[in-house]
Length: 467
Image 1: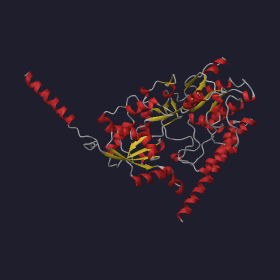
Image 2: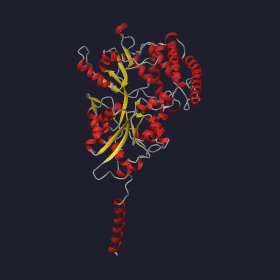
Image 3: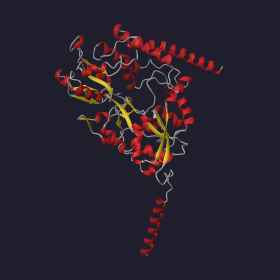
């Protein structure tokens, strides 16, 4: 009796084992010599091999790449006056790449168009390691994919607040902390406002690049505000969030808590790299910048004899108190996906898997530069500073920009008009005491008119092209 039961158990086990061993691969294997081919879209061939290709070919020497330049996407977009997504779809249809590298917005659009291959089955079958990614990354990618993974992102570009610890200690001001709100950050910055004067004025806060207009948009983006509704049909500026952002920005500039370049309408939105100099020279206590600023800081202290090194630290960028664990100030411009109808899916998957795997993450941790691996276990410190603040906040689960609109497309005439309009109203608040309510109402009213005019011009242009 026992033997009979044992035989039955053995038959069941063998049946299960046989099923596992005979499981059909989701994707056909590479050739016997590991050969294959991949067509990939990238800026240019040299950049691709430098960034990814050379490392991959060490492990897969018999896979051949064909790199098609993405430059023609912008060329077609400008020439035909179409959206980036439309030009991208034309490019994919014409070039038929096996691997597509996209930003969150275009990745989401490609999923919706059915252009990308779902990765869930191959990830499951090969037990590709998904543990160890930064918090929120897979949630964000799945949201972009309508609940499924259609791509993986090996790197992210975080923004962070760098602070001069020596300057805080010298003036007996408590150090910044992680997860401060914008109100708390600028109130802390205001404690430096009365220190120094003229060229020796010390500011509590600045940005490495930007004007008052840029600071306003940073705050608004944190508060999840948008200039246009999701369809790009209405201006949505007269909101509680925009008014709060206007008030915080105007007060910070007026009180000299924050340094920004002069508020002039014709200069609104330009980039001013000089702002970072205040931090290097000890005249700004905090600076918000992309992580690339760290390498500039290290280089400056090592090579500029006139620069005095100081003790510095990092904390997270300001957060929205309603979503204290998320930030929109993290960019993920490279999501690797496989074309749905690619004839070379296996080779393409080997590449996507490698680029997003631990080998590349380990290599990237040695020279992080301005980007960091999305895998958290390979780097703990940079210049003796903990990287915890860089990984503490989850990327906000959205592909929308602060401008809003369908696919983030904004007519340039409207963009230019709104840039000058917002800067004008912000200047009136700083210099003439105009209220946030009045400024928001003026921007809403005149912005609606500018949007209507820009849309009419777009329509007229399309009709002329048809004729």
